[in-house]
View 1 (cartoon, helix red, strand yellow):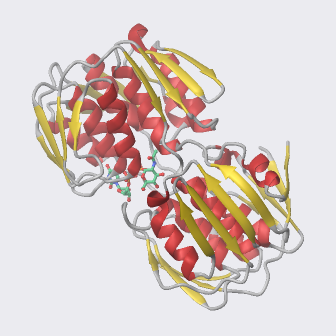
View 2 (view 1 turned 90 degrees about the horizontal axis):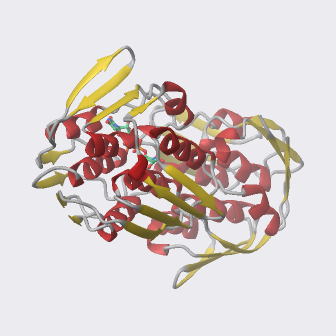
Length: 417
Ligand code: UD1
């Protein structure tokens, strides 16, 4: 597994176009199974998770090609409804294929996604939604076997607004007869992107972005072209990096509203921020101050995925910032690694108390998960001396050419094979 070597303490300056969103392209790749012709997806980031999703589509019998940032999928040749264990393991979000495969073929057989680096990731809400639409679900030999001769529109109330369960419910409901109303739905921008893709294909769906989504089942069109929305978490990562290393950053191709909570935190920490159209400019002298408590919440609250990078930035702020993580239990695994760099962070259950130190010191650390790994890069960019970040496969699941982007800003960072 590769490593990143960072010589920290360099001021960062420049302009970056933000990549397409991982969490949007994955469910839309799954949705392409439902299209009776070619799907052309633009602005697709080049990521390990996207490769894994493309491998799953190919295994299912779809024709899939990539040309630069465009991915072409033709699902008319789909031949199987089973995803083998090895492909399921390559991507933690592969459960997102469940609703679409079931909807398209009347059956889906997937191995259990199992635990992951953020703690057990249950799929009870996904299964409950599919059952409501008429699916029978059995667990057999480590596999989930989902079957439905006919899916029927239903009222689905999610016990909590799970992003993946909302997406699976939407994808299966498109194939059901009649109307489905999903209440307590997740409101993330990526759900709106999924709706936009499906609507372009002729689906009748309204309400994405609110807590109630209404889907009328019906056949989908033959060709769809869709541009994946910008990645708000990647945007927050680069902003956090420049906030603590110091410098000036202009991000282009983003939807500033999607990162409003992160922008507010960085403003409170002392950064100068301007929003102009689809651009955000941040300047920071690297002298940050502690901010009022940050509680991670489903959108439009502060995103759990942006928590690690903001924590990393605030390890060098004056004063103590408190974070409360309410979404994933194991989201603080990277904290031990930050401590090795000299960070002062106390953990108490869901709370992290981050007391700023004058400087972090470069050392050898290892990524524990995707966003936790990105946080170590953020810290390494601000730290004195050399930081090596190991286990970077985690980071490459979600960041397209992170090294190249940071080098363009003037960072001294390289990837060691
Ligand atoms: C998605 C994102 C991930 C992000 C997360 C929360 C993708 C590919 N991934 O993950 O980056 O961190 O949203 O914003 O879009 N839960 C259950 N039962 C279920 C499903 C979820 O209890 O059936 C719980 C989870 O354990 C977690 C919470 O609900 O505590 C939120 O999970 P969910 O919104 O489903 O996250 P994902 O869709 O897995």
